[in-house]
Length: 288
Image (cartoon, rainbow, N blue to C red):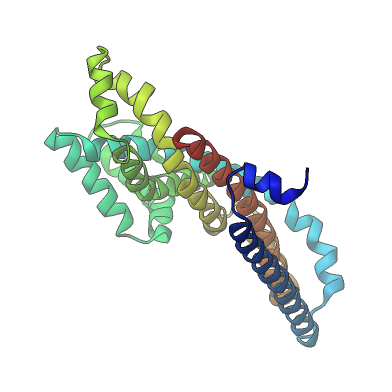
């Protein structure tokens, strides 16, 4: 059986099929031109780097040394985003709470953290927290300073987690509020408690709204994890800056580490796009 007859059987008129073909051809044409343009820009960028007289041999020599810090970068980022998810859920529930104390605490947390620079927060966890411990110890809390003096990596993880948890609080809150009130009422009618409703009904559906923006936050966190280099953590940026200063070739090292971060973000963005497509396909399946 020929194609037009099969199209008619599916209920699509030949005129509509022709329009769809034209739209698809335009998309392919745009995609091809976009790839050509991107490739041209990358080539121009490479030519510009050659014109600057970069020492590519030097960059290749220290590439392996810098990549050794990738483990610290991923460790800090993964642990921080995991804690940030916990803080964001607690913050979102506090923001939605009808208890004025819990709501006020969550509101203050979000406002304070989002209103101060991340760099200041990093130094607060690493430099100021031991001083707070000393003050509390003077007030009679013996030994508290030891527990409030954090090594560089835990301090960096906590700073990133608390900061991103505040930003993600609003994302989680919006995801929870996106679920229709009828879902909650149906859960109550079935005899579920508030906690069971959140765990079994609200959160599983809200994840489809929450996961894509959280993926964006993780990509941003991977880049912001470079701030832990200020505390002497031997991650990507610290190693690049260290070698650049030692041999007075900071430009080569900074460009090299920037390319590494760029490639990491491209990989993470590709994974994020696949996750978003999967979520969208599942949502269309439910409504279709």
